[in-house]
Image 1 (cartoon, rainbow, N blue to C red):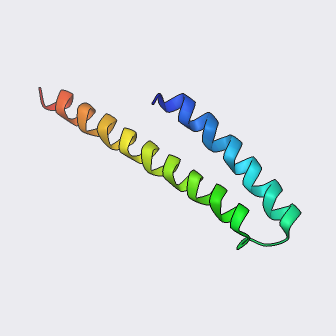
Image 2 (image 1 turned 60 degrees about the vertical axis):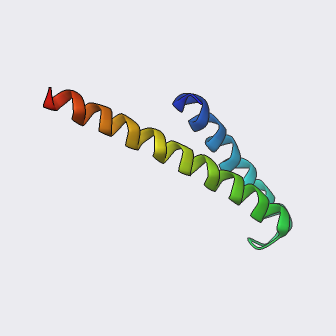
Length: 63
């Protein structure tokens, strides 16, 4: 997935997470946890993209 798209999705999830936690009054509510887990998956995907970008950049610098 494209990095910008993932970042937009993550921002949207952060907003939903905040709203859901406020509405439910708990960070351990199952609905809040589900959104949090979805955000965690996006964060991991973004970290993988950044790692790949870094490795490609380092490889280019060596050439």
